[in-house]
Image (cartoon, rainbow, N blue to C red; front, side, top):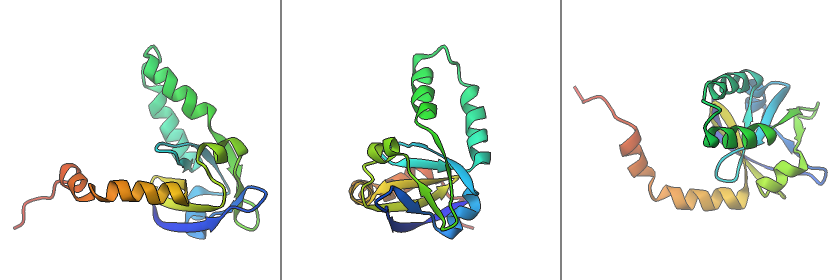
Length: 145
């Protein structure tokens, strides 16, 4: 399980340091793809295989399924962690997520997300206002005894 928030700087060659705690779960190489809300998703090879299996079960005759899987898989790249704990972010993924300098790296259960700091701050401002409402809708607690 991935948790936590880390901020790192993209170097001039497009390399990004991956925190050791996240590297443990991602492995020496992992899959990076276009995420949702303008971020990138990083999946361990094992999690990528599980996700691929689930997506393959969707009916490819539906245009929405074809469109999503096309963009999701075509936007993916395998990245390798170097000896310094960095990955090289492909230019098309940096462009998609607007990653230029400061990158926020988030552990989010089964994946790692990569956000430009500006985009992450804007997203937080927007969603923080409804955080408690989301919790009330999504999380049901057992009755107190």
